[in-house]
Amino acid sequence: MSPFGRCRKCTGTGWQAPTGRLRRRPKPCRRCQATGRRLRIGRRLHNHSTRTRAAARRIRDAARR
Image 1: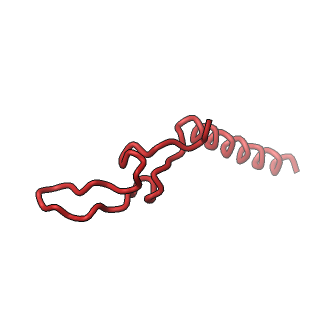
Image 2: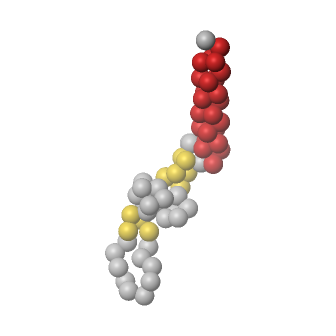
């Protein structure tokens, strides 16, 4: 399974459909930076917990010295 999934805002195209009454050109999706891909929720949680644990270990090791 890939750590990336389709962007739900642009449905994986990377471009948002024009909104409003005037027909304008599509804009690049801000949520996925026009790639059409985003990190999956589980991978985001894993990255966050890994960073938090590493920071706690650095603080603990610095206190021991």
